[in-house]
Image (cartoon, rainbow, N blue to C red; front, side, top):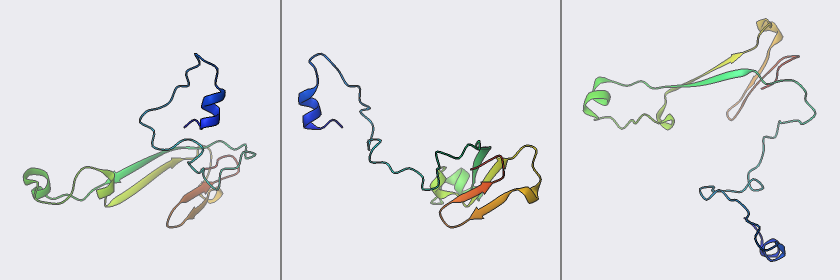
Length: 108
């Protein structure tokens, strides 16, 4: 959002494009704590898969309380590709809120 001072100092005829569906501005969203701008390693390709355990009553009758959203998933599988690396060259740090996998050439 534009502050009142910025709006008053803006030249007439200048239109500032805004995303009308945006909930927060870029300044209000905190970045990742582990992102280091001086880290030159590239990020590997990864894929996040959400899996659900559903029964026939969930699929055909709709009696269960599950919907196809990711908030109702039972298992999360994360596939990461580190080309040219052995398993012992990859460091993995996993806690309740984040997953950090890194090697000498890749960082995620």
